[in-house]
Image 1: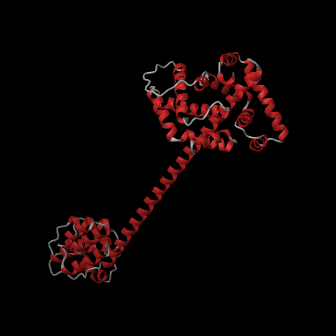
Image 2 (image 1 turned 120 degrees about the horizontal axis):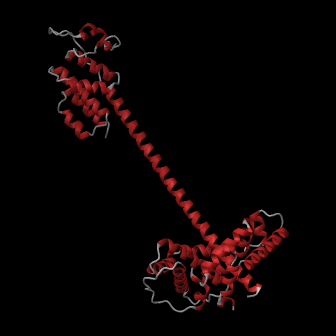
Image 3 (image 1 turned 180 degrees about the horizontal axis):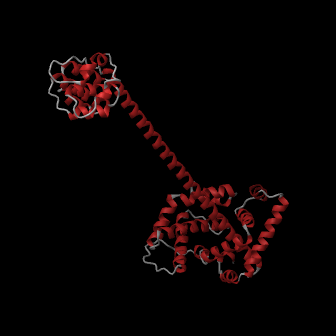
Amino acid sequence: MNDLELITALKSGPRDHDAALIFIFESAKIKNPVMAMLRAKSLSRDDCNILWTDIVVKFALLVRSGKYKHQDKMVGFIKNLGHFMALNYLRDNKKTRMTDSVEDIYFEPVAKSASLYHRELKELLEDQLVIVGKTCKDILLMWANGYSMQEIMTNLELVSLEATRKRKHICMKKLLANINNNSQMKSILDDYRNDLYN
Amino acid sequence: MNNNKIENIVNDLLYEASARKTIKKSRTKVIKLNVKILSAIAAGFILMTSVYFLFKTEQINSYQDYAIEAFEFPVISKSRSAESNIVDDYLSQINAKIFEKVLPLLTGDNLTPKDLFVKANILFSNGQFQECRKILDSVNWQNTDFNDGANWLKFLLAYSDNTDNSSLKKMLEKLNSKHQREAMLLMSKRD
């Protein structure tokens, strides 16, 4: 798969999307330069692996939301995104960066803003998803991944299409209410000066 | 921040969680696949090892069969010396290859070389190779016939134990010409 095919697949339905996502995650051509850059920041192998998953996921989100503009520099963009995410990761873990050998890093506002508050939001959402329950979590995650109501109904063995729609609506409402009632998460969201949403 | 904006961010966060789950699932599949491959390799290795040992055991059994086939119980004659041998009283039975009565009598430390030689041959013909080897190694055979017979038995034991051909060739030198020919025939069955 070339870069353009990957971008197209990431914007497609869940099956093509998942295949492209896994391809990027496992592709040595994309992964190796990013991992080398992360390792150069004195991050441990485990930290690098955690970050690599987050970088791929964040990149897929930017593609899907149309914020990534493809200009034949996909690996470069992922590397930039990785750079900003590594800085935030080091900040969150209060680690000092030992070296910064990446000279080809360029300022990328989209990559920078997308990586802000990443860890906090990720962890807080995970907590909230546990609170809403397993079925709600599964419905919301499948829906977010682009599965149709029919597919969600079949996959999760729900009674009817109408019940699935209702269930998804109730779950989303519940999740949003919980987030609004969670002062910590609310404050992070309020501080989330993300250019993506402006 | 209005609710709509929060919902947009939450949708994106949900998408990220879902993508993370997809990656995790694919990695679990790879690990499971690796475990399956490793298990298959281990099972294959065990199978190959079992087949190898089975083949080896079969081979050793067939060498033992060849050795027993080549073995011929020597004709035992009455001694002319003054030595008193237990076996002399059972010569007809021994030469008829009936050992039930004489074998239990061949015990103790006072057995003569002739008694021991007969006992070693009986044990070999009964397939009691270890006991036979013990006797052969413990006696210094003075009599030429006994010495020839003992060397032949030693060769047959070594052959049935799958001793390598170079060691067997060294043993050939101690055999008489008749046994040498038989030994060469046996060794040719290995090639």
